[in-house]
Image 1 (cartoon, one colour):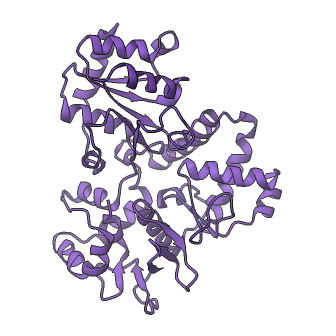
Image 2 (cartoon, helix red, strand yellow):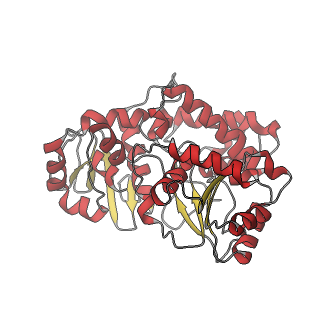
Image 3 (tube, rainbow, N blue to C red):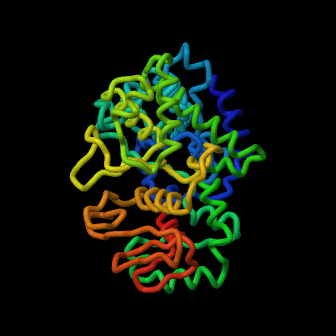
Length: 391
């Protein structure tokens, strides 16, 4: 039974070529026995798992990649499969498409308790109920987030460089030297607009139309990551699609729940639930004042990343809107980002007040200011692209 899985594993590992080594690979403590990798559809979770297998194990039979798309698991349990794997010398199971296995959390717990020599790494959708809502995994699983490409990862790939990550403190204090050093090797603005349009999702590397692939991915987020995993009746799909269209048309924007309720023809409370689903699927970002959170109404709604903003061909996307969306997405990955009550766009980590402007000629005032068209900065004016080096 295991032999067919090993043959598939060997083929996939041998044919996996990760164009960028993701930083998360070095952030995970791989000695933990149960590790969850969450990420939205399209960011490369499968490639990440296979890259780990290739880097750490090669084609050794101590490691096995398993996709729950396999019909084998309609008649056999994960627990019995893991038991046979361990009995044959297996030590690390990599489980993909976990949400397709109905008893995944319960049996992960049972595997953890029954096979103390076994390490399990599983991928999960961002909308899956994990430790906060799933008592089976409380106290035993270590969760990590795999995000889309940062601008740093994109630039390194496209320009053939190996620029390091910088902390927010380094960017604020040393941005003039850092940006000047990078600019000596490559002009980041030559690549930045392309990244904003199509660089967040790794599938831009595939020989397919990016916009069509992005639209397909977005629809899969709605149909699978929201409806299927959350067990929502398909009859509500059209209302959720309509709501997403309105967000694509307007974001960033304040949230007029009454208007949205009328346009989508559903109750106000349901609209807020749909907004939360879209956020969990990593289609939206919700910006709250410090101390407030869902189910309260956010102060502003943003698209989760700039690539999504170009999915609606009828909309003209301004440079200012793109700049704000990029900044929020880049900072939100590693920092707490809130709406500001002090005439600034964002409050970061409860301490730093940031404005975001698309042009160097815009008035910056005395706030920290991210400037969209700047290669290098000066004093409190920091190049916007440099915030893409936080991971």
